[in-house]
Length: 312
Image (cartoon, rainbow, N blue to C red; front, side, top):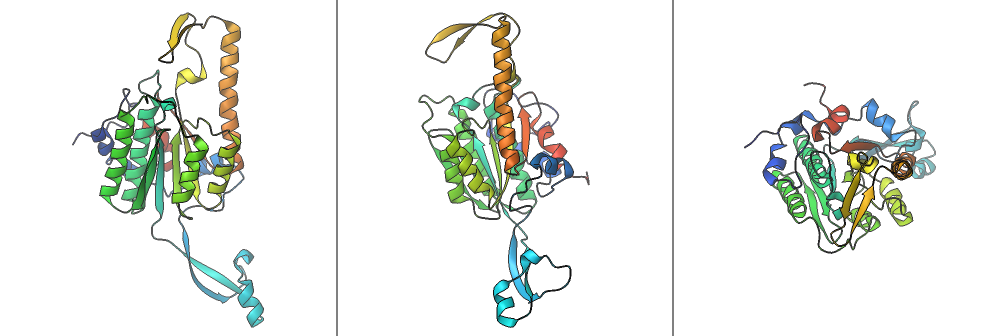
């Protein structure tokens, strides 16, 4: 099996399944359960209802000084006449789900690789790292026309099934037909399959996430699970290429773009910045950390500052 070089960006317009499998080895250097200070800062002051691993109810006992008053069992307290509190124990494992965007908007790149390839490799690192930690791993792969669900299991075969689906959807790009499913619909599907206490990683360019219905779905998701957003981007989406006249096409129509126009360049940069700021503010409001991933970065370098294993 080939070994993945974690120091270089991903390459090309398509990803190979064997490359995703090779990520199993560098993924051992990541610990997704870690919630270090840098990641906490990204989540802002607003904390979601779930952090870290899930918890199971264990017992009710008499309230003791120092216990969190939010854990008081009011029914037992009323019945007995003395304060009682609920105790919980941490789950030994948790479901970790990776939602991987392979829509047509992801089939774009000007630096090293396409966003769809970057998302696939990030998903591979996340899935293998979760399995290494003993978590159940599953996910959802979507391309705007359809989606595939992989139910969480603590199994190497399940991770391979997820990555195979990612590679299959990746190889099918670009789609012949326009996207028929919006981002809100994808989030609704996630709400259906993700159980409370799970950890969800959404790897996407978040096209359509600013729509009202999508924001509502994201809010509902954030109430019961831990969400981490990883936004895939390309440098060309933030700034136009150097001054010149460029022929552009969407596969059907063809036109010319003059990037020497200062007004056009300014408007383009401002709009791109506004879109990034809108997504960042919305996720910050929900207490969801947002990691930025660019096609000019090595996928491992995106995750390592937040999930790097300090023992290595």
